[in-house]
Length: 339
Ligand SMILES: C[S@@+](CC[C@H](N)C(=O)[O-])C[C@H]1O[C@@H](n2cnc3c(N)ncnc32)[C@H](O)[C@@H]1O
Image (cartoon, rainbow, N blue to C red; front, side, top):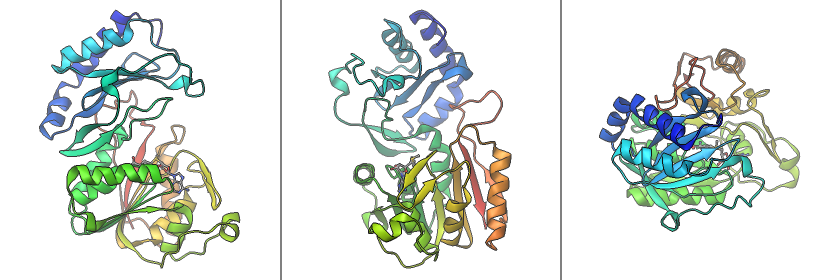
């Protein structure tokens, strides 16, 4: 923010909601109640985002805290523009390391809530200290694509988090969905999401495991790294899926190696491709904002050629229009590749 007053911020929000009016109409028609309303610098307000998650108005600051009175002004502007009364919550991400922010959520924000995307219910929880409320909104276009292309397919959802993509695949008629993540708590949210939607639990599995040894075994590769000798890991026979979603974090380490989408995307793509049936699809993502799409796509093509699975077609999926970009270069890059 650049010293805007609460009134300035409210005016910016009114403007950004108006700029999305046709998208919001479309989203409401498809029963979606979670979306971004104000997207930081691109919409005149660096360091500030405003989202709706069902009944919650989720205001995030990334550098400067909100000036006094701003949450109330933003809340009033959002309620007026949307014709809804949302519960305002401020999440100051810059203080993630300093828990004494002194800000308390309103009591009605306590517990969990439901937000809907394309008619599917997702559990939302206002978590503090810079954490997101369990659903990444910029991934909506990918969930939509997966849902539209999953009928009768086997789907492997890697780095599944709260199983948003897995749920979309199941709702799209997938025959079988595996969701792999090493965090039990996020997979538990995924299972609660399954319950909230009364979908077929028999076709949906959550697997609490490290993705690296898991996908290597599925792809028929040996498990390497320090961890392979010292740490027990879940064993899998090699097998191939029709559709693999590979959505790694920006950086992480594991006893089985580093997840480094900048320098070594290939070490994730290779086993993912090998765990995909020939002619099947990998939906690969890269969240690192400094990685340019052209160089990343080149690296995908190189890896695929090297392992004898050249890419037959590649489509890029930009996020929906509630994540506008001034130059069309979105930090989140999503490539749907058939190989
Ligand atoms: C960017 S989130 C994935 C978002 C998710 N695909 C979605 O649809 O919203 C990254 C996830 O990777 C998981 N993760 C990170 N390193 C991992 C590893 N080595 N094995 C398994 N899961 C891992 C984290 O627990 C987190 O849930």
